Image 1 (cartoon, rainbow, N blue to C red):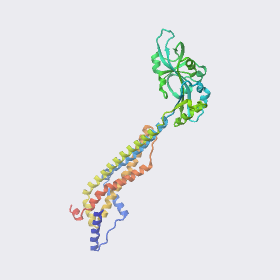
Image 2 (image 1 turned 90 degrees about the vertical axis):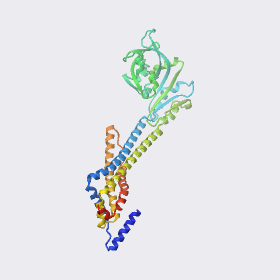
Image 3 (image 1 turned 60 degrees about the vertical axis):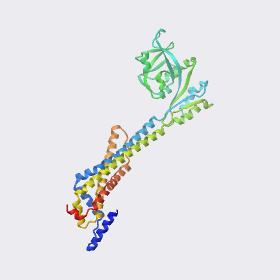
Image 4 (image 1 turned 180 degrees about the vertical axis):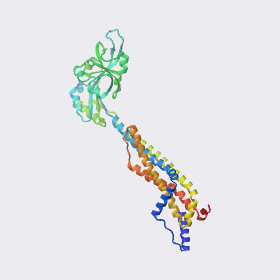
Length: 413
């Protein structure tokens, strides 16, 4: 600012020596001159503001899309948040009374429990497709699961249906097969029979995946009461209770489930719940925001440089105009302020246009992907003000150079 003050002082001294009243540049005159000069060459002005338009659009769209993606990540984590609790004996030889239907009913009354059912995991059983004892047989694990446990595991049925409460009450000899085991046994349709040991079981359904407990893809599923006699005669049988919870309730249910199933000694049961992924969620959200902000700042800086280069190049074409203004009494500060006002006006126009473009990009991308757009009006306003600030910063150096142009040298061109 020292060159500006020195030039202004020299100009005031010269005007005072001639007895001429120093000219004044009022704010509305400055605004009118800036608008007139900008609209004089609309094509060049648009190209000059293009950098700020792109910068502001990138700023708004990247932050907006980052917030939208963050919202989608948050929703995905909320949907897939830990919703499973597995309760099992914490010591060997525990009586199976904790596994009764009466105690399971008490567990299902807890707030946050979506489904809770008992399971019995048996050792590998001899399984064959035909009744003849000479037929080829395989040894496959057997899992007894009541309908509630089945709902918690959520097998995706590809043929037939899942067994229900009727099959559980009657201890019906029905079986559900994972698709790989069905192909291994040669089962091509439902309603056929397979033999577990020497007893026939009707294939009621085939599934190809489960939402919880992937070990069910390596076992035959039968009603829990159907598996009870087999568990009584087996050497080893693991019993547990599978609980599906609403999002966010797994940790609470894991603390309450042992007490609901065995109030006389909850310490004999062990409840396992996956950790809540809130830390990972926060890290992902923070990374998305930081990366978006860095990209936006880089693009806005590129827009600032673009305006500065265009303004510097425009000074050469305006030297006669600047000399004429100086010769009729314009102060160096007037030249400085006018050029700065022009670049600020171009930057502000680019910021507003870019902010609107960014909002349109966010809405279009969100609509295309079926997302809920997250638009922060504060970011759009900040982009508009940032464009004006970028134009002001970009015009500082060209304005100082224009202010130093001497009137005589300018009019000689």
